[in-house]
Length: 228
Image (cartoon, rainbow, N blue to C red; front, side, top):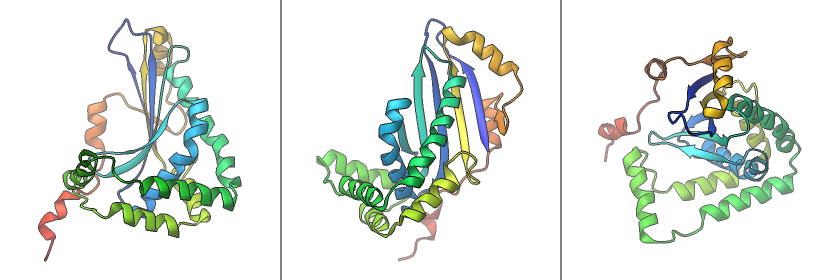
């Protein structure tokens, strides 16, 4: 399911428009985590060249996803959203045509990044405290995700892309937040006045939308079931 939330920028003198194109993927799980991280690693350079930025995102509830963030005074966010989807269509070929050597090279690069030592005590304590605050308590996360990467096959990675990220993926859940700057007020009026795009639901009230959505289970809710 794809949702679109168009909104005018709060500062009428700000000419910048912006888009956040967010793809929600899964709740914290080692193998899915590394598949998403590997996709982000592979996509970063070509995405920067075309769209400027993409990043793997994890929030305070252990939900993992991918987001594209683009700011522009030249094009309105509705147009940029279409460009993000066009990029994903073009990127399919890179995923499908990736050789075994390229796949292993990317996996190794991600493993090397994960095995880098914490730069200081502040960074190391932040890692452990995040596990406590979120409630995941996976203090051996690095070792487990490296082990998952070592088991990961190219076909499993391609299957992950086909299921969650590619255009038309059966498990794909997308939210596009389109913020229209002062230079694109006409586009805002046009986009909000038109019928919703095919296979997309336009959000009118963001608070009602939030209340209507189902919730993932809380990691913190399992504390009282822990047995020693």
